[in-house]
Length: 352
Image 1 (cartoon, rainbow, N blue to C red):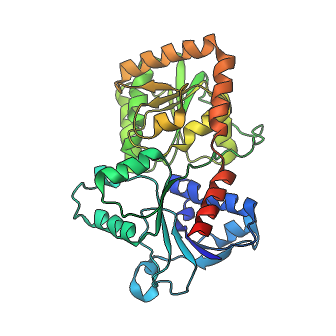
Image 2 (cartoon, rainbow, N blue to C red; image 1 turned 180 degrees about the vertical axis):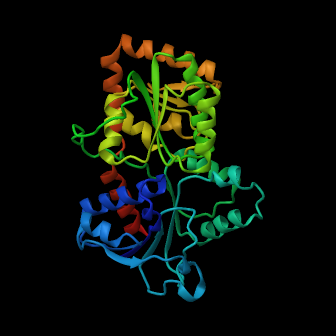
Image 3 (cartoon, helix red, strand yellow; image 1 turned 90 degrees about the vertical axis):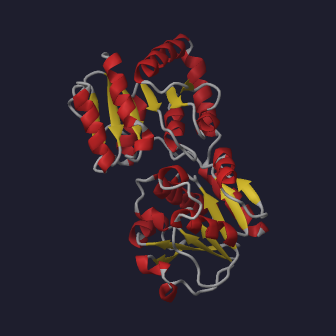
């Protein structure tokens, strides 16, 4: 069976889409199903060959593929669009699987159903022979905003990005890190609410905050302005993009993980934090309660003073029964496994 993976978002492996693409490929590689041959759409052929050798075939991605003359004409048994935002479509009418991570674009771009972004998504829905969602929330919100065709639908959870504990002994944390610290990581977009964490820090003078991610985006300027406005420059560290070893270092050594995001189709970082038994503080919104489970601590009121109170209370609760919480967090994280995720997609391919 020949499967084409429209996976060009792997070109930026530091984003959520890039992480999804990369870890799903790892799951497919581990499965090594003898009945399936994958072709991966990417510019990162050299990088992926270092990881997977010649297990996958590769089709070179370039932006012109979105236009009819350059569309891919080769016949595959299934075309799998790994992300709902791609404009790359097959020239032929092929069996087509669409994976939906979120419909945040309705809130962030336009809720006008005739907007080009929404029309693009509607066309992908119409083309699909099956639709997968990365969470129940992603499925519900898609149905809330769009007419979903009567095709098989499946919720297939993402896996835990941390497949193994890495050696972090060579990681050199910033010299400015002198106190117990809170950690968060993500794409620098306003929905992540990093600026609220910055404002919260004025009520937590005994802690520092480490924010990892691509802070060169325009929202990074908003976060830096908040740092200056609330006088917490000695407490908040923007450390930019981090590699896997550094990311794990911050998870392993943080006092807690904080994630007040407004919109998450899934939310990988809370799972990573729970892998190490760390207390997690999440916005009680979108998919985060579904992913965080019963023992995460939730912000129902996203005002910084209240967030600080919930944090202090939660940290005391965690400290009073730390062994219990560590065990429960690790159990929750273990529910999410990329090999199981890949197996669920392979079973879907075969059913189609």
